[in-house]
Image (tube, rainbow, N blue to C red; front, side):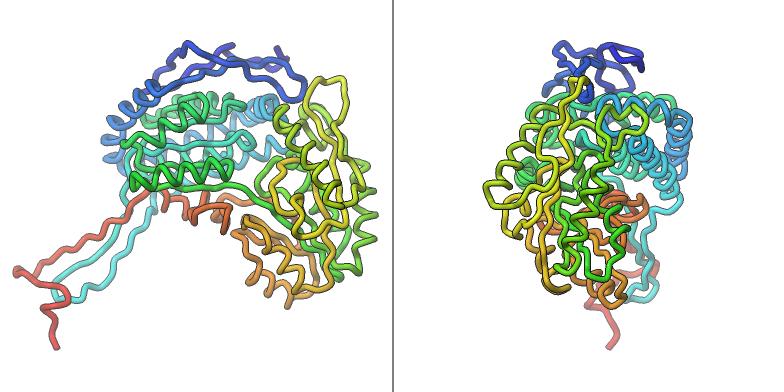
Length: 497
């Protein structure tokens, strides 16, 4: 076991405010050193059904609690998270591998989301609007959907969970949450925080297990009226198909093939910083990671040189150790996928300038060296497909217009970035880059919780996590008409000429 210990060696499901044992479990290991951390339940359909029963019962009462009072729970959750920030951050690094600095940032994002969404308890705005008939009042309001299911990934195990659960809860829903089996500790800790904050039993339920068992059961359960999923495109498409047959609302946030554009007038030192943070932070294991650099031919050579020099200073190792900049890959499957793409890049004719191999250490973990390809072509697989590792490819272009075109030539549309001093280019890029997020003179990552997060094309299906727009996923609009004329009035018919 690691020096940072948990209260238990075997996690339990959290259903109807109770901690429930599950017979079958599997080991969770620290990707930095291979040590076993804890056993996580492998739940089945029965556990999902029990969670749904609890959620249905709890949601009816929770929806009747005034929204400002629902928000008070989130305020308390935020304060508890703030008090426990360092412990949560270290546990996150232990199960996920990202360096401690990044883990602290992720926990802070969850804290920020708690306070932001708590504020929505005094808003949840609808609209009043003039009616077309005399002595008639018209308005709209947000209403909870009922029971919602959230399925979260391993790469941001607490931030993404807060993006989804907090707006669902403040809007008056009850939640069934399936966290990733690779990173269950954050779910366990957050459930305990909800318990401490006084959230009524059954409003949030955590069911651990595999997607093929727990996730499928959630999607197929007719009493769960919303599925909010972050993960792979293949899984997302299957979820969308199954939900469509049930007329069930679904929110998808999936992959990215994000690019940093470096123009000939860019601040190259700043661009290098942005590329390194975007490409190699979280070891490239984030949907907003920069995996393409689209560079103007006039500065390509010098950018390569500066990137290589900067990459020499990237330290690799256990994220809990001071000074480490690049942590481990989540597991062996992730490591093998990256290795496969290195060979693909070589076969396609890209030039490998740095990295490209597993990093050998005494830690017994899963590490890959930060990797830089150059002379990549826009249609190469390494420039089109999501690798999910510390691998970035340089693509040379001759103009601003070509850079925009190359950026948009992928099936994804999550994040993009441009480094330039030309204000005209900036505004054209903001308009023409076909992504849900655009950065100017910054990398492709670093979302703030009060803005909508999500993308276009293959990245999602139009919904957004975080920001006030997240409420659209977990609410239905209700139109209300109050006629105080004392007679039957028929819209579009009984109107004066």
